[in-house]
Length: 585
Image 1 (tube, one colour):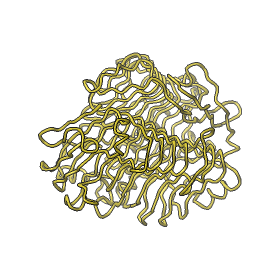
Image 2 (tube, rainbow, N blue to C red):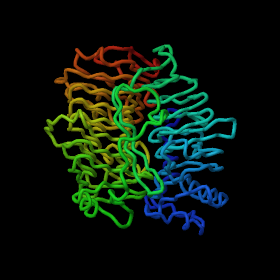
Image 3 (cartoon, helix red, strand yellow):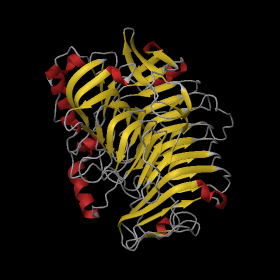
Image 4 (spheres, one colour):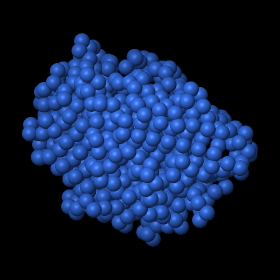
């Protein structure tokens, strides 16, 4: 989160007003939903999932959506326990869909063209004068025809993906004030995308009429209509083709009922997967899934279903786990909707995936528990050696938090031991505000540790951890777009030294690694509590320095004696209060 215009006192006051007490932060119940809402959530997907169809009373539908939005946009909504999925069967709708915290809006068609929203689907400023904390929301698989200035407003920062959408008009990636990063994939925007004050963004496999705006770090991978690469005069990084990807699965409804479509793997692709009516590799009936519901299920029932060979559809809610969810069967699909949230209780991980082929995990939020966990999400066992190049593990929209909603700690958030894993959008966040926040409270050493070989990540957002944000030990890794802030809160400069080095690099490629490449790396610092000195923003073996492309570091705010001395391995200009920006090719 970018808060360069806040002082520590302002941050504390905002946190106090927003979070008041633990009970208020996690239990805002002051806005009941309309009595008629019950008739819209009678599907097999549970009480927090609302399913709409064109023949319904649109005045009631609009009222219900507005009521959900009012709950989620409340002052303490950022850390509310409420989770919602709003699902639209094929057809046309005249609606103004305002999207806020923990709201997922999805079309249920075979194509985005099957569900058409005339009016608006939008994320606006609801707190303060910016969208710096517009997190944890998403929209997918629909066509949007914006009727106000032909422009869809999607003012967001992290953890707010747009996927598989067709916008028949323009797209504005901000509302007012600062905006701090986002993700667009498998989409078509007929008009202009305007980034305005948006500080960084990744767009993958999409079509756009035109892109306007630049700030720090804008990445385009497999995008038709992307601006020409002009680094560093303009902060654009353009990769012509996406090397390998499988688009995120989507929930679909037809005459046979609900199912989940699994797209095929694409090699060297450009543009949206659906634009040429590409058929999915397969569609899984919901009979093949165990439907996980809040208030009903826990780790015991979930693992029992997995042992029986079931896939999982995890519905909106918060799930406290006394043991890890253990995935051992190749090809298992875990599909979360409505920002479903997993929370370990006994120092366990939330999810552990064995070193097997073809597992797909999408749409989950993980919160560290109060009892310290070594790891929160683990792919493969330590020392995994198998090749999965023919059928990789895919992770989509995985958001992990250490502190914020409540006190929690974990040594590492996401650990990838298996080979050939592909991650398509993740935000790993040691909280800088909220509940249980402090250098000695929400302890977290690393956001990401990669031990496997041939791991690829599109859209790596990784912030505020206390040692290396990213630690890469495997060979042949690839990263397309990196957004990272160093921790705000080292208590002293000495407290953040290690092995004779000042501070920890954000992005660390271990000395034993012989091949690694990354594009579009943005690293930022705000040291409020101490005059921190950091020797390097990035550390790699010397032979790999020229394999990291388009790097930027930025001094945002904080102690005026703090300094980051170089971009990579002692090279690249320092940043400080007197020289706030440094770039390298």
